[in-house]
Picture 1 (cartoon, one colour):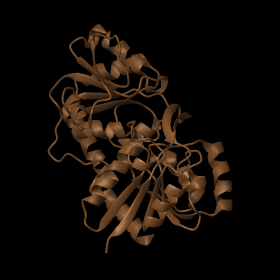
Picture 2: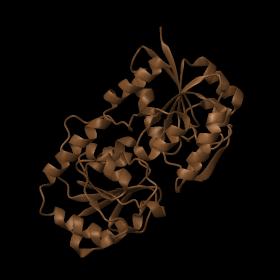
Picture 3: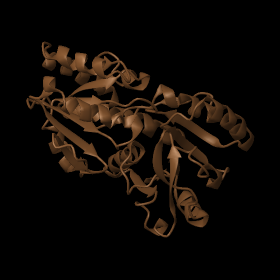
Length: 329
């Protein structure tokens, strides 16, 4: 007998994001096994939601496209179909209030909302008494999970590990991210203008075109093209200054043959706990010095350490944890 799993997220699948990526991975993994039937309730994946309005709201120092007012009857139809209801990022405004309280859920928390908001939510949801299990992808999201469950489970963001990968030979720097302040694209532009790095190629995957002639820019490429872009560079620069709960692109970069250099955000350091290469946040000279010093290092050895670190994000191993939770529900 098949187990029917419903995956719910308020984020729009018309726009790339880490949460949507994880939902897609879980859906793909489960549907590859005959034991499971899977539905996704999310804008861009659920055809009946096309008439619902998407809102662009400030969230976690960024602009997120979310479904704030899903059709309640449609949502209940999907929920009543399912044996397991797995909700991703339940604290996004108003989604929670549309979930019936007589069901058991798995709630996965991806982002940190801050201490004040979390304290408020903890009081609120103790009153509402939702039943289920909380999971969190990183320590920064753990406080959210604790608001719903006293014993949440750590299941990190997942990735399909490339088994035969090695460090790319091409000498280039890669930036991935929207052109917003916290992503620090200005540092990447400034870096491309330095004579010290004139022998390097510069590539960016971003949301809009730029006039920077030294940077090869790709706007919202497909996953297939994104993989090809990774192959053109050997160092990925995570220049973010704040509000990163995990850093899935760091894992993707290592998994595609790039050595990762990042700002010293706690969330980035924790992603590569034994192999991180960091510069002082907001300090451009520190970034230049780290990159300059790498010229005399064994990059293959450094990348091998990072590749070893990312094994804990293996999709197969972490899905075993979710499947165990599905069985408990």
